[in-house]
Length: 241
Image 1 (cartoon, one colour):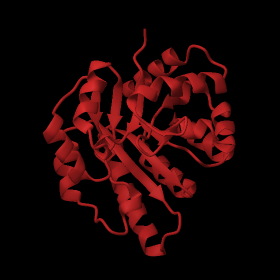
Image 2: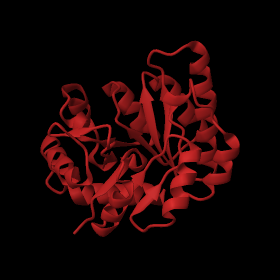
Image 3: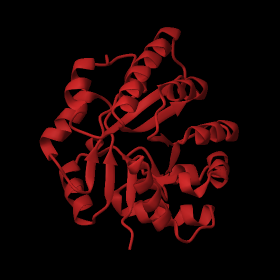
Image 4: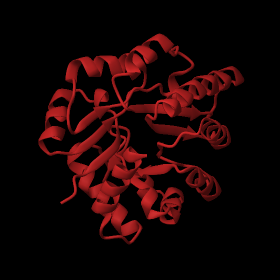
């Protein structure tokens, strides 16, 4: 019996987050809760403390770069409390050159820190594959999960060469472009995410009861009936890097 694993979940965006936290632990669902800025991570860490099944990642979502400054002080003060970093990355969709440069500087700093201290990163990338690849390669990051990958097959291959893993959600499995990429991925680089509440399952906003449905859909898409074991083993492998 292999526990379900969700490698990218925004617990703090749910109104009933305390109940969800309790249920995730009760159901023994290994869940990596990402945050959008260090201050949010700090709040979550203070509220919930240490849990066997629910872990919090310290993040800085690139999409908030234009209106929310990145606090290095908060990042450094809190990153010692966790082995996980996310959501971080680059998002170049419809932004100015100034914001683009800020995103690159911030992600380069976070990526370097994560590499030196062997932290696992769950990474956002939107129309920024070249810059993201360059930073990861330069910093030598070993523990990287590309979240909701939307790039080309060629870029997927290049990230695979770097040793990256890819987390898959239901929206990706229902989209013809991303579904095609998923079918081309090596099975030993595939993980599962929900990206709740920013994803849907059967037309409904994600909740933890839908996680098995993502596994079932993924098993069908890649024609693999031992998907629970594969995802469990893949996550175990990336933690040991």
